[in-house]
Length: 159
Image (cartoon, rainbow, N blue to C red; front, side):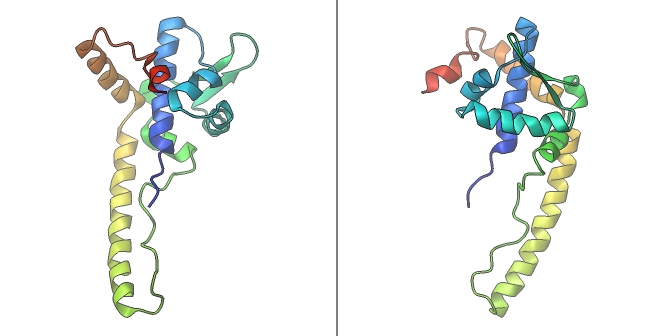
């Protein structure tokens, strides 16, 4: 099963945006975010457009333009970000049907579907409790533990 990494990727980008703006006072461009996410700037713009529609980010055009957070970090939950991404399925709705008509598979799939639904409800509740400020505080703690670490250029050295 392929893992959907859109939520973790966009949270990564949002924290970089917050850190960048704190340091420089300027927004991050789609090109800069694409380096952080190891993707194409077009993918960044398409993804950020959904967050802009939900009021989580804003874009500025022209020289010195780019993407900024629209709200303080403590006013954005991971649940809101996930919803802005279209409610990325972090669990499948139900197991796949591989042997249509098999009563054993039907019993197993019904039990798993109920379990997936309960797990999804718990996960969504937890995502609604965690803010970007919580993630930023953890990032700050990690940076304090590694004072010589240059995270801003770490992505460029990956390739």
